[in-house]
Amino acid sequence: MITRRQFTASTPMLAAGALALSGCSAGPVTDGYEAVAERTWQLGNSTNLNGAALGRELVRCATLAPSSHNTQCWKFALDANGSSIGILPDLARRCPAVDPDDHHVFVSLGCAAENLIQAALAHGLKGDAQFDATGNAVRVVLEPTRAQSTPLFTAIPLRQCTRGEYDGKALSSEELALLQRAGSSDTVHLLLLTERPAMEQTLDYVIQGNSAQLADAAFVKELKDWIRFNGAEAVRMRDGLYSASSGNPNIPSWIGDLAFRWLLTAKGENDKYARQVRSSAGIAVFVGQAADKAHWVEVGRCYERFALQATALGIRNAFLNQPVEVAALRPPFAAALGLSGQRPDLVVRFGRGPLLPRSLRQPVDAVLV
Image (cartoon, rainbow, N blue to C red; front, side, top):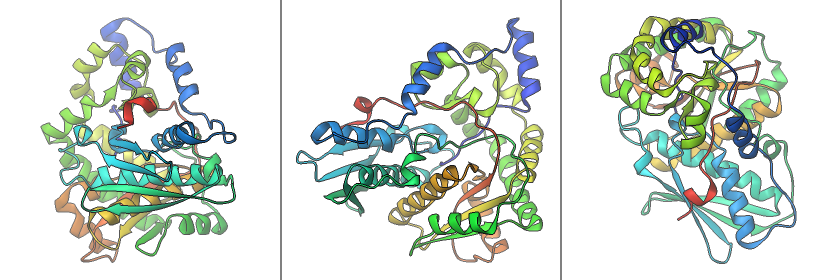
């Protein structure tokens, strides 16, 4: 979140550095991580739940949404009579270096709201998301309806931001149409870039933005603070970016702390992004009608529907948000897309590729107020 960066100049370099420093081999994630991940990423019981138990299950599904650096920058308030659930920003988990105006925070709230709405429908409740500008929160009002388990709902525990290379194959026109429909609304416009010149143009802005961010000490420190270098650390924290989720080996945290800045180079990262974009089927750019919190929430909802629809089709996706995170790049990037005067909100590559290990989530009790 909405940014997810990878701790690597390249996976082979990271593995070599870890081995040289520690004398240990790069092995699979720990059993502890695997067990926790399996419990976290499950569909759950879709029948015979009511009252507080149903509210907690809806919140659990909502927390499986993406967030910037997997900060999980949200809190949830259950209404006593079960008629609504509030989603509030947890500003203690904001990322001021990469997200100074809290854009990604409110996009993340929208992603969580969409998951909640899809899960509510499966449990016989129709959800209506309303943004409360006074409280800077989202309120999802729930009313009884016919239960419907949609492909988007069943995709919730399968969705991930897959930060690896894809197979480079084009999608069908039918698949692109489904993604376009899922990712659009009355107030959010979705551009799907599938022609190589347009993708290369976007890659150029990604590289410019990435180079600027990696030259910013505050950005690099903030990113490192949210990296979880091994399964044990990921399980202990239940947040942040698990290194293996980017295809990197598990290494001791002290080695990660020492090696991080040495291995994270602009050239290595830019070369990696070039490979990833060129292996993708296309790039999606989400553009809200206005640059305010209510529209950022709606962008998050549209992105999450896009991601769930993609997952249902066996299509992966990952963020390339550097052109919208570096403020100086936004106007020329928008102009290059024919969007002068508008603010592009999210940049996402998509295509088919293998799954990677998942980042974890906070337990429900930790996010309830």
